[in-house]
Image (cartoon, rainbow, N blue to C red; front, side):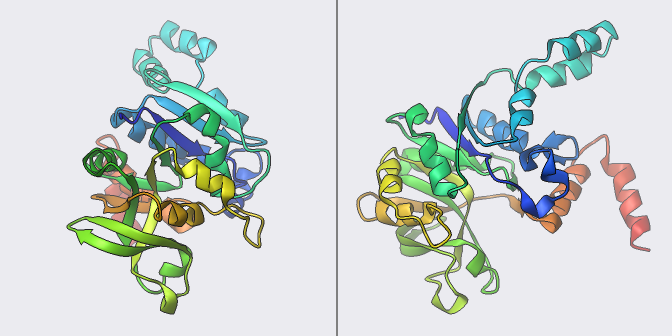
Length: 287
């Protein structure tokens, strides 16, 4: 079945970016001039997905405004002859249908995904975390869709990380490895370095069969009151095949300040309108 829908969890408080996120959603922080949430939506669009489900919470109204039509702004831009900017603004919402669902309590990523169940329905779907910025020739989620169509099972984006980093991630316990595709025996949430079953960390891109919802409903909240997506995936592995995929591309964790800055630099250096002068400036900074 074709992947038509994508879920974008966007209900968190963004405490690592305070005070900027006190009045503005973290997902609206820009990488140069494109908000994090829009980068993820663009990836989905480029992968053939046009039904966008954004899980929001209190104080996230700016996200809804961003993906809505702005009649006044577009009219003013057109009247002033700024047709290029008008086109850019319209591209934000063109060719997609956006639906919003509210996560009433901050009960973890698993709960955020479960909140979208009634909208997703009984079909496979994608999940994209805007914190993970991935630069690649072929969109990461499209790479994963291709694996899903080949293997007919849920797919998790994975990358190899160091022993020092592994305790910050959900980790795959591999069963079979076929080039870049790894069948998962189970998944483990943030294991200690000496207990990690592998160095294959799960990154914020997923393709799920609708069966994941059944396991999310049964998942017991952890000590922090959160429903862990990794725990539900591990149970899914017992009934269906789940695969990790070593995607091609460069990933930045824009959920922390250093990763956000690195992603911004990478994006700026790839822009024809910025790269020459920006590279010159960076060289001056290093003198």
